[in-house]
Structures are given as structure tokens and as C-alpha cells.
Length: 189
Ligand code: SF4
Ligand code: SF4
Image 1 (spheres, protein in one colour):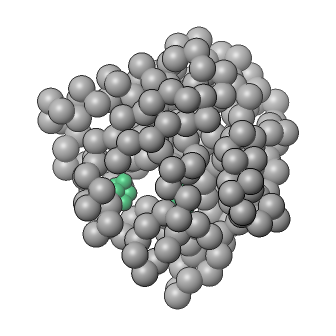
Image 2 (cartoon, helix red, strand yellow):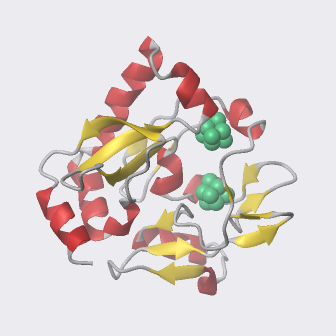
């Protein structure tokens, strides 16, 4: 799987599509108001609405730009409204948000709250199993370069709600450079 974010920077993917299609972790949530529901940057929100999505599905966030998607009930859990549970496909795949493109990587506050870090969520079975392989370690370096690129950092700064709270299931692989200003924004909100 390979696509690009709103800043037109390519983010490589390492998990084969068929692995994701037969996995039941992504796009499903335990609570209607799960804090893990995907965040869309302002540009991504506009793009998905322009493609026909209902604008009322996008809940404005504290940064004044990004939105979080309203989940919908499905069986005894909740799913992203763009997820097709019959096929396990994302119906907006080419324009899905950076937040989804990144997974199983996650941007979050460090455990002590002093920095923004990038980590790999061990709840992803593929990530957990392959984390120590040479190929995955190489991929980690690619993702770090992508996140640290000026274009992507600008997107993150403007849409800082994409930075989640610390999660102990996420194994930290990188501390973002000069994340003090991001932390300052998170602390005042
Ligand atoms: S948890 Fe990992 S393997 Fe499963 S769908 Fe998500 S990215 Fe794919
Ligand atoms: S936008 Fe697509 S990839 Fe992201 S949670 Fe929704 S269905 Fe899954």
C-alpha cells in the first residue's frame, strides 16, 4: 500500500494489503467517542467532504483546524463511517488521513509529557511481530525522515490534535526534534 498525504510527500508502507484485509484491529473501536478515532487535518477534511462525505461527520478540534471523525455503531462495537466491514476496505483509501496512513505508527506525547514522540503500536500484530527485523527497522527510519520533513512538520504544527495522549501499548522509536513548541501548544489546551 502506498499513498501520499496532503503535503504531497510520499509515505512508504510496509504491511502487505492482504495482511490488513484479514486483520480485525484497524478502523474498529470499542467506544462511540473513542479518543483513537482518526483525526483529519483541515486539508484532508476538505478533500473528503469534496469527495462526497457528510460534513456533519467531522467534529472540530481544539487546534481550530483538524477534525475527528464521528464513529458509527456496528454490531457490538463502533467503526469509522468510511470502513466497509464486509470487505475490510477503506472507502476513501486514496485520500485517507495521515493519521491512518501512519498506523501502526502513532504520534503522541511522551510518558512524562515533555516531548512529542513517534512510536509503533504493538496492538498491530504485524508491527509487533516484525518490529526487530531489518526491513522494519529500515522502514522506521523512512517514517522518521517523513515525519521530520518540513512539509509534514508544518501540517502537524497546524493540526496538532493529531498528536495523541501517551499510550503504553506504543513502543517509542523516535523523539521529534525541537518539539517544545508543539508541547507548549498541547499544554495550553
Ligand atoms: S492492526 Fe496492523 S495488520 Fe491489522 S489492519 Fe491495522 S495496520 Fe493492518
Ligand atoms: S479513514 Fe479509512 S483507514 Fe482511516 S479509520 Fe476510516 S476506514 Fe480506516
